[in-house]
Length: 317
Ligand code: F6P
Image (tube, rainbow, N blue to C red; front, side):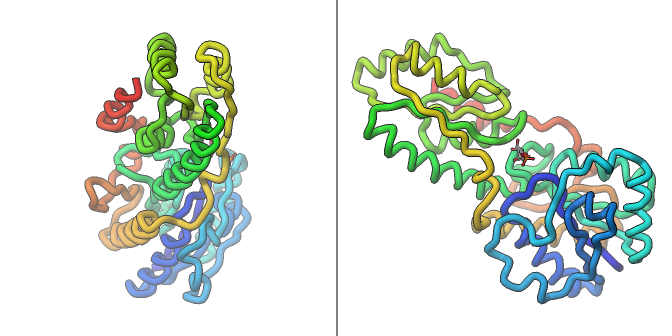
């Protein structure tokens, strides 16, 4: 079978290990592996070529994706999806493995309902906002980038007796902020999923400062859009000189962690095995340490952060 792999939407560390394993295992299974370059935009423009072992040599440690990625507005016009299908048909490609987030899976849902293309999704986003999987590809590396940044910021916070507001990515999902706050011992965590009790936090922080607290680390998820408000509150109501650090795209970059390399391998292998079992329109998930697939419609259900993580946030109150 001719099977292609592509990235779609925001890149995440671990895509290159997944790409490498895809090529190796596809050959082992007797398939002909292909790459679609530059995501949905590239699919529309016919940027498709055969994959070779040499393409994936020396990429295991690299962040980003050697095959590129994109967000595509053209995809929402039927005439471009038709072009995309014709490009696949011309190459004889029967199935595509898409590394992406929920936006990419929605895009594929429209496509597979129009054309007979086998689709298997690999949840790839640092936001960790895909239903049914404990982890998406890239999350572990992003968490470690944030941990490293917070550790460094703490050096200045503690030396200068300052408050720092650190904004994490994640769109509407507070997973990155919540896990980072717990594992970095932040005093404040503001995420979209939980009401932040400012009055209670004011009382506690003032008491702690009276008992000698010298600095404050506050982690705020971008989805709350409250970064500046929290900074003004710390400065004016809590009375501590405050600085803001927006971590931005550094969270999406860097060498994939060991966990993300292993996840990349596992997601790619399970995707190929799912195709071999005759599955179509499925998404690979990693649940309780095992890989399996769920239907695309299930994967598109709204994501909810694990209760255990939310309950650990209470010690920050
Ligand atoms: O979905 C991944 C993500 O990094 C989000 O956390 C962030 O809000 C968004 O992508 C940024 O998108 P862009 O790279 O297009 O600015």
